[in-house]
Every structure is written in C-alpha cells, then in structure tokens.
Length: 229
Figure 1 (tube, helix red, strand yellow):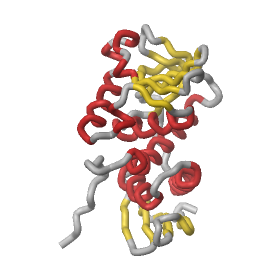
Figure 2 (cartoon, rainbow, N blue to C red):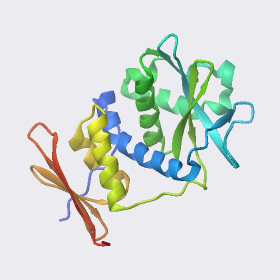
Figure 3 (spheres, rainbow, N blue to C red):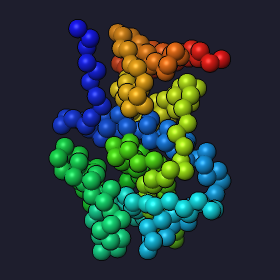
Figure 4 (cartoon, rainbow, N blue to C red):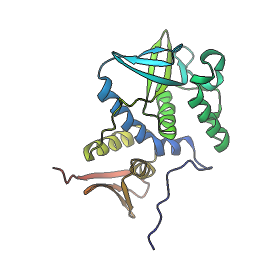
C-alpha cells in the first residue's frame, strides 16, 4: 500500500521557529515572483483605498502590522482596527486566530519588542500560511507598514535552479530547521518528496534536488539534476 504523504500544517507543539521553517521558503519564493514584476519600483501605499502601487501596477492589500524604528516594536494590525478599519485587517485577524488556537505568542501578542529583520520573518510566515502572493514593507516617517498582496499580475515562476537557490539562501540566512524547511517547501510547491535517513529528494518533474543532512539536521550538500539542461 502506498504511504500517504503527511501534509504541511501547523501543529499544537510548533514553535515560531518551526512555523517559519515550514512556510518561510515558500514566502521567499513568492517574493521573487513579486520582484520579477515590480523591478526597482518602490511601493506607494494608499490606506484609504486599500491599495499599493508600483509604477502603473496597482494591487489590493491587507495590512499585517507595523514596526516602529524608535521603539523597536512590532504592532499587529488586528489590534489597530480603529486605525486601519476592519476590511484591511482580515489577514492579520486570521493570524491572531491561529496564534490563539496554537498558543503562538508571536501571533497572539498585540505588541512585540523586536527588530526590523524579525518583522520580515513574521510577514514571511503570514504570507506562507495564508498563501498570499507576496508581502511588502512601506517605510513612512520612522514607521514600516507590512502588507500582503494578491494580484493576477504576479506570475508564479518555477524552475529547478530557483528552488535550489531559494532553499539554499533560506537555510543559510535564517535561524530555522533545514530538514523541516526542505520537506515543507517541496510539498507546499506541489513537488514530489522522498525522505531518506541522511538526505531528502525533491522531484520537480524529471528533475531532482538532493539535499544531504547531518545527524543534527544541518545541510551538508545540495545537488541539482536538471533534465531541461
């Protein structure tokens, strides 16, 4: 009997580090898609209209939260309905519900003392969990407002090289569990996944990415076999 693959979900004993491991690479994948579309154009946020504009490209947004540079403080938008209105904080409210259900302090606390880089990890996790197309941070007068976007203009770009590069950069630059991250990124992208004792395989059509791990789960090597080359 064929073994049924376990889907990627949030579980009750997951820490934020585990959640970021599961959903962060997918978020970076989505960020790359956004970057390919907007190039060097900076986003202009219109809170009243609930949109962000990059040159002549306009997208609807949901506001996740904002970071105060002076206070080193993140505030979730679900705690600021009086500022943003109920319609713009639906995504943030979903994250709060997840935080309440699974006892995730980073999602359930209205205010977090943190730094700017950590705010990106919050936005990455939210983007991956809720499956938005991407996120973006707009800086205005010492406040960085983080939003998630949805747009048919953001084209999903897939390749073996992109998968390899996204995963490599994710496990190198973020404090995560690489083994969890590789499995989750593979499955969330809809690729085939084959686990082994000291390496995992991602199957992208006829192409393969093989990632080796130490006993502690750190990456030893990443091999790419691209059938299109």
